[in-house]
Image 1 (cartoon, rainbow, N blue to C red):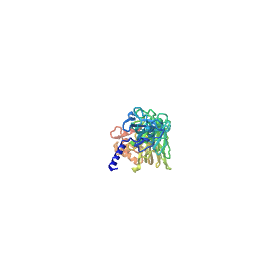
Image 2 (cartoon, rainbow, N blue to C red):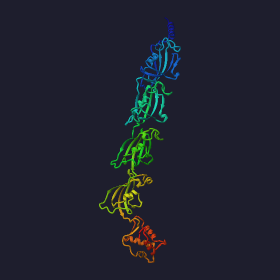
Image 3 (tube, rainbow, N blue to C red):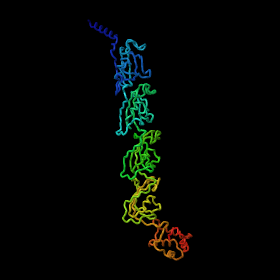
Image 4 (cartoon, one colour):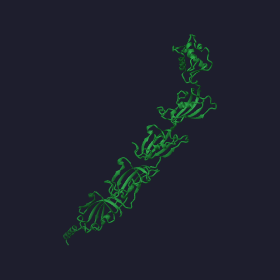
Length: 563
């Protein structure tokens, strides 16, 4: 055979091959066109699936599409509810996987076809996107991806919870979120207020825990779904963070953090308390603090001035104690909440007790040192000289005479110091030392002293009596220590002009004091006292005292018996 003949024969063979019919398919052909990075579950025989598809002939002509109907195709796999080729093609698929499936006629509609839609012996192509898988044997699946280190309490049946969630279908389609509404979902657990799967999935959670709760449709919204957002027979996935948890039977919870030793007194109903606090929700969200206002919260306890839980939590505390009080909403702000506190929120208060007192309290006096010879004792009218250190009950410094290097000198019973300190300085002897606890109604009261003493503050004084000068009897500014001269007026009238002027009067009284014959009331300016005495004798106010005036004064019932 010539070379030319051989070339012609090869050309004929090629042309025949070009016109040859395609080789028939013996089985389905699967081409994976999109595979998700993670495949937590693949379809098995007996699973229920939801998927979209486009069905075409090999020439690309479409004969059916679930997209055109606006609904997924929902069916059991391997239960002869599908053509055999599709039953095989779906096995092993993952959610969000996409496959191009070629199905031969013997695994499709065979020699009979399907009405006017699918002719006999037709090869079918399906572009399939799997959206959902579940099985009648499924239960709720829980995957915790964050759990607090401390989990003192978990959700139980009949608890009330507040949580945020994102709700998606199994393919990731978002259908709802509490975050977009900027408010938690608040409900009871395990009593039928939730879909069954969520009722189960929330059990055992801690506040602050985050978990993924997945559920089949029969534990979700079933065959009918929920409106346009959740299709029928859809598996649901909830990404949940638990923010709050309580039970209607809860009372307050008290955790003592610092308890001073000793604790000589504990608060009781009716006491007035000053305390600092930080207030948070159960998940740690801050809502208020007395520290941020740089002022204690001051109130009566157990009298209804506070939320019920705080009224309870402040009873039986020690001065200086720190405690954490956890209050369920029915003992706090209830379902309504406030502008800062959500409804049905559990509140957590970290409390530091600064001081407390009772309106019936008097000065508490503790003698820390008393000389063996403790006489005389101070009394009203005495001039006392003492040192002191003054603090608040939490140790905050107020003042000290030691800072000035001199004593504080006061006349007892004249209002020169707060009443409680006046009381504490009474009946003391020189060198005696005392500690005083002065309640605010005997101290600086509700207003305090701006920049120095807070309002309603209990005061603590450590005092030491350094010296004392006995006062005069009440109503007297000058008294004689010896017999009064029978010629008193003559002794005052040094120039014997028949009257006593102010300098003569002053000189005479000062001389009597210096010689020990008389005594002026301590704690006052001596010349002011003498001027007052002169004015009392100068009846007509002409600046001099005559013998007649002097005698007339002696004859009157004395108001002050200075002379």
